[in-house]
Image 1: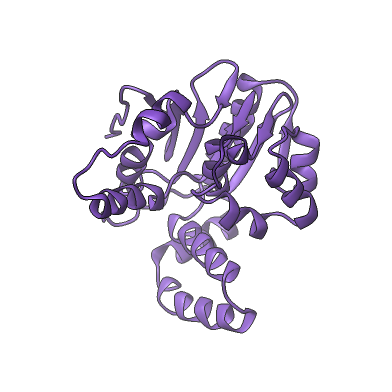
Image 2: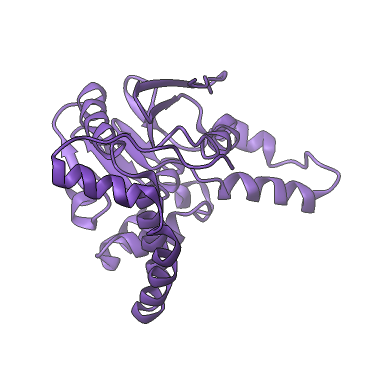
Length: 260
């Protein structure tokens, strides 16, 4: 049975088996807690993150809220810091569809996604320097490893100037630009998500895990890592089902991952 993870600022739905669509209007309020729950739902294979707003993905930090939260709100800053750190480290999403304005916090979130699609009207900005701070939730840690143009990346980070989908593609930040806006890019993302959700969840989990390991380790270390991974994961029934489906040209339905 599909669980409704909707909240005050989040709406969830299930457009297809194994696919959850998460649409948000305020990102910081419920993002961490919601995706913490979603990441533990083994019926979900693919999560799509999108905005519920018609003209923007997110404009980033709420300045008024930031001014209020800049004053002490806890009698133990260390424990409050750990709580915020845990929120940041939660697995956010796998696939993303953006449109309109995608500033500041949007870039942090999108860097943590596996696949990024953008509508042709999307405008990005690494906005933090304009409000006197350093991007601190993943942009500067992940973007250099995602993109292939460090000079352009530094220019965008130092100037905070907006950039469109052409430069986002030049950076290697997005894999597909969809002509149109919210409806069009979301339709493309859903088509991809439905297709990926038909694959073995064991194989998908392993592929993502090994790719993440390769990002921060040597080739030799990663070869040893994937050998160890496959030593156990190739005993999965998913392998036998996949081979049978391939030889018989029939679709197969895989069991969900074990509950965490």
